Image 1: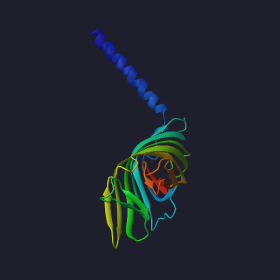
Image 2 (image 1 turned 30 degrees about the vertical axis):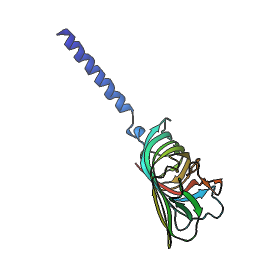
Image 3 (image 1 turned 180 degrees about the vertical axis):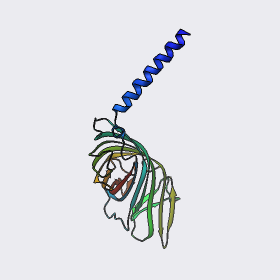
Image 4 (image 1 turned 90 degrees about the horizontal axis):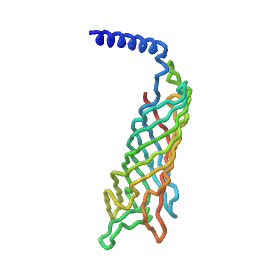
Length: 227
């Protein structure tokens, strides 16, 4: 019986101490920022071969979740670790043909297209350092987020259609599966500029006219954050 009373007394003391500590910690010291993200970008391809061009709007879309982990006392500095999805729709004059006479796809520049696209679907893992002058009372603040993300290509489709030819290739093994590169997000409130550069070529050991075909992604646009 004495042991039970001792445990009850210890429990009362512990709960009283916990409640007192909670009163000392203001609720605004526990806030987190920018947990979900969504971006709309234009995909500018770099390291392009001679004669290569893009048409219309080569769009890029991303969305996902970032766990905000503040590490400074005023929570201005934080680490963001997340998981997301990325989609790129590249419209260009690059023809990818799967000819019966060739063991691999044949690549060439062809301006006779009615439609010529490359669609890429990625799972992405971003990791970033975050600075913002945010507070619990206001969601309007300046931010500078810079980071690095790794992306895995899980689905792809290339389309080329002209008056005389039509090629539709899904999940080509000649596309680079693992991509990575740095990115930067800068802005105020809901307006945030975003840029990402892929350090690896979109194509893996592909030759066009005896030269390596590269095409590195360079996405520029806007990113939006939701708590």
